[in-house]
Image 1: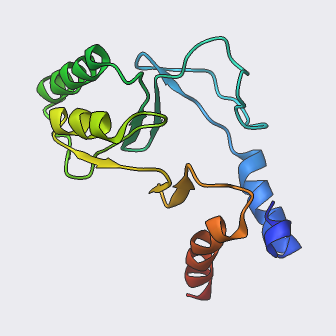
Image 2: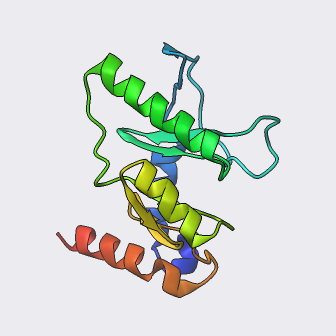
Length: 152
């Protein structure tokens, strides 16, 4: 993919080396899993369970059905997290985004969770989420950000 976007072979090898030789461990219910080496990414239908959330550093994506009882459960869970941890969730940075859900309902869910509602595509961790990944235009801002960082 990098070579298709014109990234040089040296850079591609360096990035591949960083990814290939890194070892990971995942916290499962607070306990670290055995270390593993990354391989090909998770693909649709690779696993026999539903993914309910994804986390990267201090950033969390929560996935749920567009049903009131799930939204209320998420609100309770987030409140319990705040009470137990003593940390505060920044709802001004939080977003509700629906896929195949009426805009009015997404807006109501966002209001209940005291956060913003947005439509796809949007940016998550600097990458386009919900955009056509095969279009060059989708990746233009990502490539420009890399160019800015590399020029420094």
